[in-house]
Image (cartoon, rainbow, N blue to C red; front, top):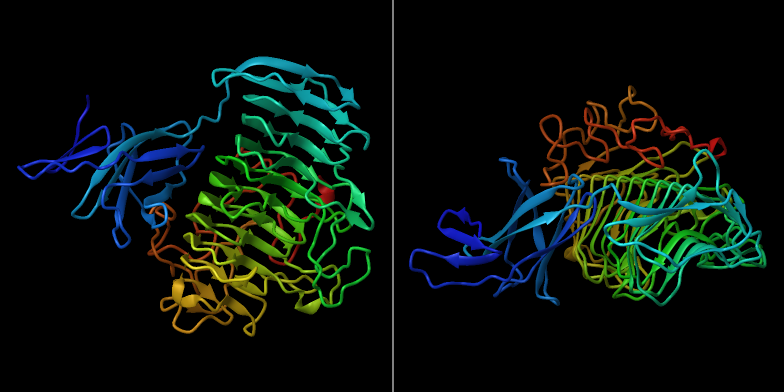
Length: 562
């Protein structure tokens, strides 16, 4: 059995033996849950209590250099320390050491997911079909069943509103790749509400035209990809799909369901959604998708699936990153529920209302970092009340830890509208606690608006942010009030701060999140000047230019180039 030494400590299989004549103390073995780029860490040592700090260090197995991770958060209800290691390499084994100052220590090995899936069998789909594809044959972890088109051909399933779904999934270890799905009367891809279906990869597909119509608008909660209340659905990977143009529109806050205008902007949106996974088993990855439409086919939410407060979406151990999302009348990303080791980063969001919904976070921690927000709106009319919008919609009495790091709120020129509230901690019948914000650009439309609106601010920690609006008294002691200035030499879609801007080299070091900063300190906002740029959508990080032009600060993306 291998042994690794911590000065006077010897760790065997995660158990601490205190040497030099001191009585033996046993620490429970920590565990980890992986995705491609993250590890969720869990540890419940004897005597675990609030006020203790669990220090984290990690390295790729075989590497000599240790890195520092963010300390774990203590959940007093579960009597458990939890947290995540992020920005890791796929298919890599990591050594992780955990220690409490003057107390227990433990270690573990954990391996991130491989991005290569072994294929045991390929099912070639016909070029055209009007019938639902029911997938009842799956594979194993050693070999998936791949459903795809023939080489050099297309595979189109268009059920022409005559079938509920284009595809129904009733198997595990399945890959659906490169299929065009159209015309489902309810959901494009559907998982039944009972049965264990795990390890499903949905990639490189084109999904449109789903959902039923109810009066002037679409039926609520019908989605291109849908799971409704099945806790046995786990490890769904949704990547590099184009999801666009549902059959019907969604009403905005400023439209009644009969299509007339609601001048008070008090009608909750309801209609089709791109991805809706409700009360599943979690451990999902949703990445590098293009979610887009036009002004006559808005979405309800984008990626989400609000359900029970103790589950919801994405439940736990899940990542949402690298997506381009636009035209959602409610939440482009709706991460509401337990949110245990949930990570949301590197998404570009445009023309939507309450950008990231976290009402509530009952477990946590959830990490929200390096997202970029462009235009925002509450309704389709230019005079809808101030075109009010929010970046972080928190509340409902959420008590789980939330970390909000390095996000950027852009302010496009008129007639487009920007975000009017950075953090809005007052939603859905209560305020949240345990929120931490660092290194964000909370630039709202003007100084009369709230960069941070939080009546519960004593329970939350805001600092080192660049802001131009109002904030709670006593917060942002190291923050900077001012307007960001972006480097005029930036390529389209990049928003690094100019060297003369407030917030340039103005951030604080956040272990595991910005260790690779350039300059004397991290820049505030999503982009670090001089570092690799962020990429979004189906061609992100593949070495190829994206086929559509991402917006500059004053221009919107053109969806008609798809």
